[in-house]
Image (cartoon, rainbow, N blue to C red; front, side, top):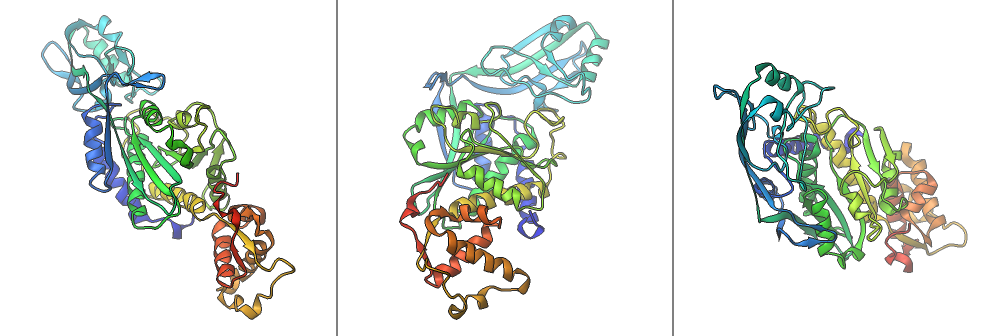
Length: 442
Protein backbone atom coordinates (compact mmCIF):
# COMPACT_ATOMS: atom_id res chain seq x y z
CA UNK A 1 0.00 0.00 0.00
CA UNK A 2 1.01 3.63 -0.26
CA UNK A 3 1.09 5.89 2.76
CA UNK A 4 -1.79 7.91 1.31
CA UNK A 5 -4.16 4.93 1.39
CA UNK A 6 -3.39 3.83 4.97
CA UNK A 7 -5.30 5.53 7.79
CA UNK A 8 -2.96 5.42 10.79
CA UNK A 9 -5.53 7.01 13.10
CA UNK A 10 -7.88 4.16 12.27
CA UNK A 11 -5.03 1.76 13.00
CA UNK A 12 -4.71 3.25 16.46
CA UNK A 13 -8.45 2.86 17.01
CA UNK A 14 -8.29 -0.80 16.00
CA UNK A 15 -5.34 -1.36 18.32
CA UNK A 16 -7.25 0.22 21.20
CA UNK A 17 -10.25 -2.02 20.54
CA UNK A 18 -8.01 -5.10 20.37
CA UNK A 19 -6.46 -4.04 23.69
CA UNK A 20 -9.91 -3.84 25.26
CA UNK A 21 -10.74 -7.36 24.06
CA UNK A 22 -7.39 -8.89 25.01
CA UNK A 23 -7.98 -9.70 28.72
CA UNK A 24 -11.23 -11.61 28.15
CA UNK A 25 -11.09 -15.40 28.53
CA UNK A 26 -12.89 -16.69 25.44
CA UNK A 27 -13.61 -20.17 24.21
CA UNK A 28 -15.93 -21.70 21.62
CA UNK A 29 -18.84 -21.15 24.02
CA UNK A 30 -19.52 -19.25 27.20
CA UNK A 31 -19.66 -15.87 28.83
CA UNK A 32 -16.35 -14.73 27.37
CA UNK A 33 -17.85 -14.84 23.90
CA UNK A 34 -20.90 -12.90 25.08
CA UNK A 35 -18.78 -10.25 26.82
CA UNK A 36 -16.78 -9.81 23.61
CA UNK A 37 -19.93 -9.45 21.52
CA UNK A 38 -21.27 -6.90 24.01
CA UNK A 39 -18.23 -4.71 23.34
CA UNK A 40 -18.37 -5.10 19.56
CA UNK A 41 -22.09 -4.30 19.60
CA UNK A 42 -21.32 -0.91 21.10
CA UNK A 43 -19.81 -0.06 17.71
CA UNK A 44 -21.95 -2.00 15.22
CA UNK A 45 -25.49 -3.34 15.83
CA UNK A 46 -24.62 -7.03 15.63
CA UNK A 47 -27.53 -9.43 15.91
CA UNK A 48 -26.79 -12.21 18.37
CA UNK A 49 -27.76 -15.85 17.76
CA UNK A 50 -27.57 -18.92 19.99
CA UNK A 51 -28.04 -22.64 19.46
CA UNK A 52 -28.52 -25.12 22.29
CA UNK A 53 -26.11 -27.81 23.43
CA UNK A 54 -26.80 -31.11 21.71
CA UNK A 55 -28.14 -29.63 18.47
CA UNK A 56 -26.82 -31.42 15.38
CA UNK A 57 -25.00 -29.21 12.87
CA UNK A 58 -23.95 -31.15 9.79
CA UNK A 59 -21.73 -34.00 11.10
CA UNK A 60 -21.11 -32.22 14.42
CA UNK A 61 -23.02 -31.41 17.59
CA UNK A 62 -23.11 -28.25 19.71
CA UNK A 63 -20.99 -29.07 22.79
CA UNK A 64 -21.64 -28.28 26.42
CA UNK A 65 -21.06 -24.66 27.36
CA UNK A 66 -17.81 -23.95 29.22
CA UNK A 67 -17.20 -21.22 31.77
CA UNK A 68 -14.38 -20.76 34.26
CA UNK A 69 -14.13 -18.69 37.45
CA UNK A 70 -10.67 -19.48 38.80
CA UNK A 71 -7.74 -21.88 38.53
CA UNK A 72 -4.36 -22.27 40.20
CA UNK A 73 -1.58 -24.56 41.35
CA UNK A 74 -0.44 -23.80 44.92
CA UNK A 75 2.39 -25.14 47.05
CA UNK A 76 1.94 -26.59 50.54
CA UNK A 77 1.88 -23.08 52.06
CA UNK A 78 -1.03 -22.08 49.85
CA UNK A 79 1.06 -19.78 47.67
CA UNK A 80 -0.19 -19.75 44.09
CA UNK A 81 2.64 -20.64 41.73
CA UNK A 82 0.50 -20.88 38.57
CA UNK A 83 -2.48 -18.53 38.57
CA UNK A 84 -5.27 -18.18 36.01
CA UNK A 85 -5.60 -14.56 37.13
CA UNK A 86 -2.13 -13.85 35.72
CA UNK A 87 -2.92 -15.30 32.28
CA UNK A 88 -5.99 -17.11 31.04
CA UNK A 89 -3.65 -19.13 28.81
CA UNK A 90 -2.54 -20.97 31.95
CA UNK A 91 -5.57 -23.29 31.79
CA UNK A 92 -6.15 -25.91 29.13
CA UNK A 93 -9.16 -24.38 27.39
CA UNK A 94 -12.33 -26.40 28.12
CA UNK A 95 -10.74 -28.09 31.14
CA UNK A 96 -13.07 -30.15 33.28
CA UNK A 97 -13.21 -29.05 36.94
CA UNK A 98 -10.82 -30.44 39.51
CA UNK A 99 -9.98 -29.76 43.16
CA UNK A 100 -7.30 -32.09 44.51
CA UNK A 101 -3.94 -32.52 46.22
CA UNK A 102 -1.59 -34.19 43.76
CA UNK A 103 2.06 -35.25 43.78
CA UNK A 104 4.25 -33.63 41.15
CA UNK A 105 4.58 -36.85 39.13
CA UNK A 106 0.81 -37.05 38.66
CA UNK A 107 0.36 -33.33 38.10
CA UNK A 108 3.07 -33.31 35.44
CA UNK A 109 0.91 -35.52 33.20
CA UNK A 110 -1.50 -32.59 32.90
CA UNK A 111 1.02 -29.84 32.20
CA UNK A 112 1.78 -28.42 28.74
CA UNK A 113 4.93 -26.46 27.98
CA UNK A 114 7.18 -25.46 25.07
CA UNK A 115 10.69 -26.72 25.92
CA UNK A 116 12.07 -25.08 22.77
CA UNK A 117 10.55 -21.73 23.87
CA UNK A 118 11.10 -22.00 27.63
CA UNK A 119 9.77 -18.56 28.60
CA UNK A 120 6.44 -18.79 26.76
CA UNK A 121 3.06 -20.19 27.78
CA UNK A 122 1.43 -22.32 25.07
CA UNK A 123 -2.25 -22.06 24.14
CA UNK A 124 -3.90 -25.49 24.18
CA UNK A 125 -7.51 -26.72 23.98
CA UNK A 126 -9.52 -29.87 24.60
CA UNK A 127 -12.94 -28.97 23.23
CA UNK A 128 -14.25 -32.40 22.31
CA UNK A 129 -12.38 -34.71 24.69
CA UNK A 130 -12.81 -34.48 28.47
CA UNK A 131 -9.53 -33.48 30.08
CA UNK A 132 -8.01 -30.95 32.44
CA UNK A 133 -4.66 -29.31 32.41
CA UNK A 134 -2.40 -26.33 32.93
CA UNK A 135 -0.20 -24.51 30.43
CA UNK A 136 2.94 -22.76 31.63
CA UNK A 137 6.40 -21.77 30.59
CA UNK A 138 8.95 -24.58 30.72
CA UNK A 139 10.88 -22.62 33.34
CA UNK A 140 7.78 -22.63 35.56
CA UNK A 141 7.53 -26.40 35.15
CA UNK A 142 11.15 -26.77 36.29
CA UNK A 143 10.33 -24.57 39.27
CA UNK A 144 7.49 -26.92 40.22
CA UNK A 145 9.82 -29.88 39.85
CA UNK A 146 12.36 -28.23 42.15
CA UNK A 147 9.69 -27.63 44.80
CA UNK A 148 8.43 -31.22 44.58
CA UNK A 149 6.01 -32.77 47.02
CA UNK A 150 2.28 -32.33 46.79
CA UNK A 151 0.44 -29.44 45.16
CA UNK A 152 -3.05 -28.04 45.54
CA UNK A 153 -4.68 -28.14 42.09
CA UNK A 154 -7.89 -26.20 41.45
CA UNK A 155 -9.81 -25.57 38.23
CA UNK A 156 -13.14 -23.96 39.05
CA UNK A 157 -14.88 -24.53 35.72
CA UNK A 158 -18.34 -25.60 34.59
CA UNK A 159 -19.30 -27.78 31.65
CA UNK A 160 -23.06 -27.86 31.39
CA UNK A 161 -25.94 -27.57 28.91
CA UNK A 162 -25.93 -24.11 27.40
CA UNK A 163 -25.50 -22.50 24.01
CA UNK A 164 -23.14 -21.74 21.16
CA UNK A 165 -23.21 -17.97 20.59
CA UNK A 166 -22.34 -15.97 17.50
CA UNK A 167 -23.23 -12.64 15.92
CA UNK A 168 -24.03 -11.23 12.49
CA UNK A 169 -24.37 -7.79 10.99
CA UNK A 170 -25.86 -7.30 7.52
CA UNK A 171 -25.22 -4.17 5.48
CA UNK A 172 -27.83 -4.05 2.69
CA UNK A 173 -26.60 -3.28 -0.80
CA UNK A 174 -28.24 -2.52 -4.14
CA UNK A 175 -28.50 -6.29 -4.77
CA UNK A 176 -29.20 -9.24 -2.51
CA UNK A 177 -26.04 -10.96 -3.71
CA UNK A 178 -23.63 -11.16 -0.78
CA UNK A 179 -20.03 -10.69 0.19
CA UNK A 180 -19.38 -12.43 3.52
CA UNK A 181 -16.61 -11.51 5.95
CA UNK A 182 -15.94 -13.85 8.85
CA UNK A 183 -13.63 -13.86 11.85
CA UNK A 184 -13.35 -16.12 14.89
CA UNK A 185 -14.19 -15.12 18.44
CA UNK A 186 -13.07 -18.25 20.33
CA UNK A 187 -9.44 -17.53 21.27
CA UNK A 188 -8.58 -16.10 24.70
CA UNK A 189 -5.76 -13.59 25.26
CA UNK A 190 -4.03 -13.81 21.90
CA UNK A 191 -3.68 -10.33 20.41
CA UNK A 192 -3.00 -11.22 16.80
CA UNK A 193 -5.03 -14.42 16.76
CA UNK A 194 -7.59 -13.00 17.06
CA UNK A 195 -8.27 -9.71 18.83
CA UNK A 196 -6.84 -8.08 15.70
CA UNK A 197 -9.36 -9.74 13.39
CA UNK A 198 -12.28 -8.88 15.67
CA UNK A 199 -11.23 -5.22 15.77
CA UNK A 200 -10.67 -4.91 12.02
CA UNK A 201 -13.91 -6.62 11.00
CA UNK A 202 -15.96 -4.49 13.40
CA UNK A 203 -14.52 -1.16 12.28
CA UNK A 204 -14.82 -2.16 8.62
CA UNK A 205 -18.50 -2.94 9.21
CA UNK A 206 -18.83 0.50 10.82
CA UNK A 207 -17.35 2.14 7.72
CA UNK A 208 -19.69 0.30 5.36
CA UNK A 209 -22.70 1.57 7.29
CA UNK A 210 -21.89 5.02 5.83
CA UNK A 211 -21.61 3.79 2.23
CA UNK A 212 -23.86 2.70 -0.56
CA UNK A 213 -22.62 -0.58 -1.97
CA UNK A 214 -23.55 -2.80 -4.87
CA UNK A 215 -23.41 -6.00 -2.83
CA UNK A 216 -24.99 -6.84 0.48
CA UNK A 217 -22.25 -7.44 3.07
CA UNK A 218 -22.66 -10.00 5.84
CA UNK A 219 -20.26 -9.88 8.80
CA UNK A 220 -19.90 -13.02 10.92
CA UNK A 221 -18.28 -13.18 14.36
CA UNK A 222 -18.22 -16.89 15.10
CA UNK A 223 -16.38 -19.50 17.17
CA UNK A 224 -13.78 -21.35 15.09
CA UNK A 225 -14.87 -24.47 13.21
CA UNK A 226 -18.06 -25.23 15.14
CA UNK A 227 -19.28 -21.68 14.43
CA UNK A 228 -18.84 -21.86 10.66
CA UNK A 229 -20.30 -25.36 10.60
CA UNK A 230 -23.30 -24.10 12.54
CA UNK A 231 -23.81 -21.10 10.26
CA UNK A 232 -23.51 -23.24 7.14
CA UNK A 233 -25.92 -25.82 8.55
CA UNK A 234 -28.53 -23.14 9.19
CA UNK A 235 -27.98 -21.17 5.97
CA UNK A 236 -27.54 -23.77 3.25
CA UNK A 237 -30.08 -22.11 0.93
CA UNK A 238 -28.49 -18.69 1.46
CA UNK A 239 -25.08 -19.83 0.22
CA UNK A 240 -26.23 -19.58 -3.41
CA UNK A 241 -26.24 -15.79 -3.07
CA UNK A 242 -22.61 -15.59 -1.85
CA UNK A 243 -20.42 -14.17 -4.62
CA UNK A 244 -17.28 -13.71 -2.52
CA UNK A 245 -16.18 -14.44 1.01
CA UNK A 246 -13.20 -13.69 3.20
CA UNK A 247 -11.98 -15.12 6.48
CA UNK A 248 -9.70 -12.67 8.25
CA UNK A 249 -7.46 -13.30 11.23
CA UNK A 250 -3.98 -12.42 12.43
CA UNK A 251 -4.03 -9.02 10.76
CA UNK A 252 -1.86 -7.01 13.15
CA UNK A 253 1.57 -8.69 13.31
CA UNK A 254 4.79 -7.44 11.64
CA UNK A 255 4.89 -10.09 8.90
CA UNK A 256 4.16 -9.38 5.26
CA UNK A 257 0.57 -9.79 4.13
CA UNK A 258 -0.55 -13.28 3.10
CA UNK A 259 -3.60 -14.22 1.06
CA UNK A 260 -4.71 -17.83 0.75
CA UNK A 261 -6.78 -18.59 -2.33
CA UNK A 262 -10.20 -20.18 -2.32
CA UNK A 263 -10.59 -23.83 -3.26
CA UNK A 264 -11.68 -22.65 -6.71
CA UNK A 265 -8.44 -20.74 -7.14
CA UNK A 266 -9.80 -18.32 -9.76
CA UNK A 267 -12.74 -16.77 -7.91
CA UNK A 268 -13.11 -13.02 -8.20
CA UNK A 269 -11.90 -12.57 -4.62
CA UNK A 270 -8.70 -14.45 -5.51
CA UNK A 271 -8.18 -12.19 -8.50
CA UNK A 272 -8.98 -9.03 -6.53
CA UNK A 273 -6.36 -9.73 -3.86
CA UNK A 274 -3.79 -10.73 -6.47
CA UNK A 275 -4.44 -7.44 -8.24
CA UNK A 276 -4.05 -5.38 -5.06
CA UNK A 277 -0.82 -7.16 -4.17
CA UNK A 278 0.54 -6.71 -7.68
CA UNK A 279 0.02 -2.94 -7.62
CA UNK A 280 1.09 -2.36 -4.02
CA UNK A 281 4.35 -0.97 -2.74
CA UNK A 282 4.16 -3.35 0.24
CA UNK A 283 5.35 -6.94 0.03
CA UNK A 284 2.69 -9.64 -0.08
CA UNK A 285 2.46 -13.39 -0.58
CA UNK A 286 -0.28 -15.46 -2.21
CA UNK A 287 -0.56 -19.15 -1.37
CA UNK A 288 -2.73 -21.85 -2.88
CA UNK A 289 -5.65 -23.39 -1.05
CA UNK A 290 -4.92 -26.18 1.42
CA UNK A 291 -7.58 -27.86 3.62
CA UNK A 292 -5.87 -26.63 6.80
CA UNK A 293 -6.09 -23.29 8.51
CA UNK A 294 -9.15 -21.43 9.70
CA UNK A 295 -12.84 -21.40 8.79
CA UNK A 296 -12.18 -21.01 5.07
CA UNK A 297 -11.78 -24.79 5.01
CA UNK A 298 -15.43 -25.18 6.06
CA UNK A 299 -16.75 -22.61 3.58
CA UNK A 300 -14.58 -24.22 0.88
CA UNK A 301 -15.54 -27.82 1.73
CA UNK A 302 -16.60 -29.67 -1.44
CA UNK A 303 -20.30 -29.73 -0.55
CA UNK A 304 -20.33 -25.91 -0.47
CA UNK A 305 -17.22 -24.90 -2.48
CA UNK A 306 -17.83 -21.23 -1.79
CA UNK A 307 -15.48 -18.54 -3.15
CA UNK A 308 -13.84 -17.88 0.23
CA UNK A 309 -10.26 -16.76 0.68
CA UNK A 310 -8.23 -16.12 3.83
CA UNK A 311 -6.37 -12.90 4.63
CA UNK A 312 -3.74 -12.80 7.34
CA UNK A 313 -0.25 -11.42 7.83
CA UNK A 314 2.04 -14.14 9.20
CA UNK A 315 0.77 -17.49 7.95
CA UNK A 316 -0.92 -19.59 10.62
CA UNK A 317 1.31 -22.00 12.58
CA UNK A 318 4.51 -20.62 11.02
CA UNK A 319 5.60 -17.70 13.23
CA UNK A 320 7.16 -18.36 16.65
CA UNK A 321 4.59 -16.29 18.55
CA UNK A 322 1.68 -18.34 17.17
CA UNK A 323 -0.55 -19.78 19.93
CA UNK A 324 1.78 -18.65 22.70
CA UNK A 325 1.87 -15.91 25.31
CA UNK A 326 4.21 -13.99 22.98
CA UNK A 327 1.12 -13.18 20.91
CA UNK A 328 0.49 -10.23 23.19
CA UNK A 329 -0.33 -6.58 22.61
CA UNK A 330 3.31 -5.75 21.88
CA UNK A 331 3.23 -8.17 18.95
CA UNK A 332 0.62 -6.16 17.02
CA UNK A 333 0.67 -2.52 15.96
CA UNK A 334 -1.70 0.11 14.66
CA UNK A 335 0.22 0.63 11.44
CA UNK A 336 0.04 -3.08 10.54
CA UNK A 337 -3.67 -3.13 11.37
CA UNK A 338 -4.16 -0.07 9.17
CA UNK A 339 -2.26 -1.68 6.31
CA UNK A 340 -4.35 -4.86 6.57
CA UNK A 341 -7.53 -2.78 6.67
CA UNK A 342 -6.53 -0.85 3.54
CA UNK A 343 -5.63 -4.05 1.70
CA UNK A 344 -8.97 -5.70 2.48
CA UNK A 345 -10.87 -2.51 1.67
CA UNK A 346 -9.14 -2.11 -1.70
CA UNK A 347 -9.75 -5.74 -2.72
CA UNK A 348 -13.43 -5.59 -1.79
CA UNK A 349 -13.82 -2.24 -3.54
CA UNK A 350 -12.64 -3.92 -6.73
CA UNK A 351 -15.31 -6.59 -6.42
CA UNK A 352 -18.00 -4.05 -5.58
CA UNK A 353 -17.14 -1.76 -8.52
CA UNK A 354 -16.34 -4.41 -11.12
CA UNK A 355 -18.79 -4.41 -14.04
CA UNK A 356 -19.22 -5.11 -17.74
CA UNK A 357 -19.50 -2.28 -20.25
CA UNK A 358 -20.26 -2.05 -23.95
CA UNK A 359 -18.48 0.28 -26.37
CA UNK A 360 -21.18 2.34 -28.12
CA UNK A 361 -18.78 3.37 -30.93
CA UNK A 362 -16.88 0.14 -31.60
CA UNK A 363 -15.88 0.84 -35.23
CA UNK A 364 -12.59 2.63 -34.89
CA UNK A 365 -11.62 4.80 -31.98
CA UNK A 366 -14.07 7.58 -31.16
CA UNK A 367 -12.64 11.10 -31.16
CA UNK A 368 -11.89 11.80 -27.52
CA UNK A 369 -10.52 15.32 -27.94
CA UNK A 370 -13.71 16.95 -29.19
CA UNK A 371 -15.58 15.44 -26.24
CA UNK A 372 -13.24 17.27 -23.87
CA UNK A 373 -12.10 14.08 -22.13
CA UNK A 374 -8.42 14.97 -22.32
CA UNK A 375 -9.08 18.12 -20.29
CA UNK A 376 -10.45 15.96 -17.48
CA UNK A 377 -7.41 13.75 -17.19
CA UNK A 378 -5.50 15.76 -14.59
CA UNK A 379 -1.75 16.02 -14.05
CA UNK A 380 0.63 15.62 -16.95
CA UNK A 381 2.56 12.87 -15.18
CA UNK A 382 -0.53 10.66 -15.10
CA UNK A 383 -1.94 11.71 -18.47
CA UNK A 384 -0.38 8.88 -20.42
CA UNK A 385 -1.78 6.23 -18.08
CA UNK A 386 -5.24 7.78 -18.19
CA UNK A 387 -5.09 7.95 -21.99
CA UNK A 388 -3.98 4.34 -22.15
CA UNK A 389 -6.66 3.27 -19.67
CA UNK A 390 -9.39 4.87 -21.78
CA UNK A 391 -8.13 3.13 -24.90
CA UNK A 392 -8.06 -0.22 -23.11
CA UNK A 393 -11.61 0.28 -21.80
CA UNK A 394 -12.86 1.21 -25.25
CA UNK A 395 -11.11 -1.71 -26.89
CA UNK A 396 -12.22 -4.42 -24.45
CA UNK A 397 -15.70 -3.16 -23.58
CA UNK A 398 -17.39 -5.71 -25.81
CA UNK A 399 -19.68 -7.16 -23.15
CA UNK A 400 -17.35 -10.07 -22.38
CA UNK A 401 -14.66 -8.32 -20.34
CA UNK A 402 -15.21 -6.82 -16.91
CA UNK A 403 -13.24 -3.85 -15.65
CA UNK A 404 -11.06 -6.21 -13.62
CA UNK A 405 -10.43 -8.25 -16.78
CA UNK A 406 -9.35 -5.04 -18.52
CA UNK A 407 -7.12 -3.95 -15.65
CA UNK A 408 -5.39 -7.33 -15.62
CA UNK A 409 -4.91 -7.32 -19.39
CA UNK A 410 -3.65 -3.74 -19.37
CA UNK A 411 -1.37 -4.21 -16.38
CA UNK A 412 -2.85 -1.07 -14.82
CA UNK A 413 -4.33 -0.53 -11.36
CA UNK A 414 -8.06 -1.15 -11.20
CA UNK A 415 -8.70 2.38 -9.89
CA UNK A 416 -7.28 3.95 -13.07
CA UNK A 417 -9.37 1.66 -15.29
CA UNK A 418 -12.46 2.40 -13.21
CA UNK A 419 -11.89 6.17 -13.43
CA UNK A 420 -11.42 5.92 -17.20
CA UNK A 421 -14.64 3.92 -17.53
CA UNK A 422 -16.56 6.57 -15.59
CA UNK A 423 -15.26 9.33 -17.89
CA UNK A 424 -16.19 7.31 -20.96
CA UNK A 425 -19.63 6.53 -19.59
CA UNK A 426 -20.22 10.20 -18.79
CA UNK A 427 -19.28 11.00 -22.42
CA UNK A 428 -21.82 8.39 -23.64
CA UNK A 429 -19.08 6.30 -25.24
CA UNK A 430 -19.73 3.19 -23.14
CA UNK A 431 -22.79 1.88 -21.35
CA UNK A 432 -23.64 -1.03 -19.06
CA UNK A 433 -23.60 -4.27 -20.99
CA UNK A 434 -26.51 -6.72 -21.06
CA UNK A 435 -23.98 -8.97 -19.35
CA UNK A 436 -23.87 -6.58 -16.37
CA UNK A 437 -25.78 -9.03 -14.23
CA UNK A 438 -22.96 -11.56 -14.45
CA UNK A 439 -21.25 -10.90 -11.15
CA UNK A 440 -18.30 -13.24 -11.20
CA UNK A 441 -16.48 -13.28 -14.56
CA UNK A 442 -14.26 -16.07 -13.25
